[in-house]
Image (tube, rainbow, N blue to C red; front, side, top):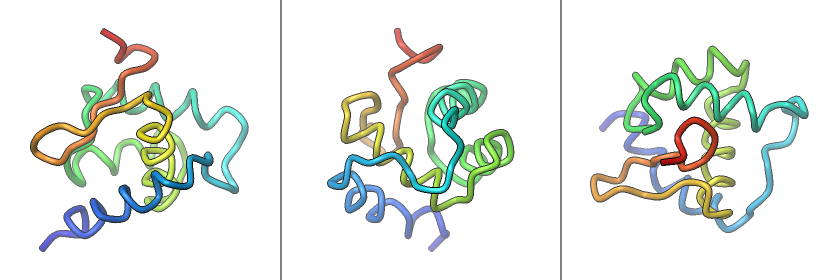
Length: 93
């Protein structure tokens, strides 16, 4: 089982918090949106999460928390395969 597969339940748990991750810069939401757009707007696996981490300077946990925040606020949605699609910024369609 990959680390990503273990992370999916965490996203669901964190979504209940609906708080942006602590310890990230004020522009983290915009940086996250831009980084997710650069990987095609869908977060499926490590190959999607790692570039978002590198582009934003956030840790994996912070990226997962930001994803949960977006899910909780209706700015992202879960797809049938369990991946997450961002629906804001450049990903709004």
